[in-house]
Image (cartoon, rainbow, N blue to C red; front, side, top):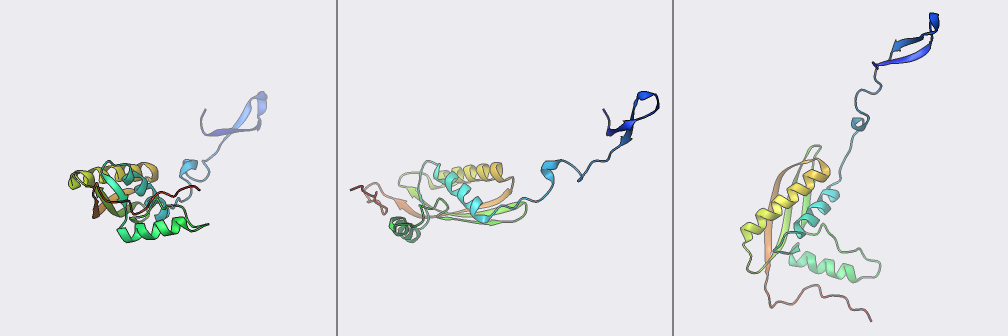
Length: 156
């Protein structure tokens, strides 16, 4: 069937057809604008970075300490998945800065490469934004005998 629609009955009992143009210009799924907040990209990148073996934590020691205190305050915010991640989001591209703590003994260059690959894949797949760069700053190394800075909360 062509771009026609029935508009009554003509002589001889056959339907009369008239041409109908498409409304709105194109696919309905492409009408309008989608904007993605920096925080959305930061969360996606933070989760993707944490999935990489060798990444112990995200953020500097100071930001993790403040996060641990904030998490213990009744009614405080939950642990932030975007800690250690800063995104700059444009209309079609994004750039990311990540601050990570790696486990002792891992190859930092291999971990950084794996973090970049995982973050770029997740962000581009979920947002359709082009990731132009992922800058990684390694702020610390977690030694095997170091105590956790964020001890588990105990139920009493």
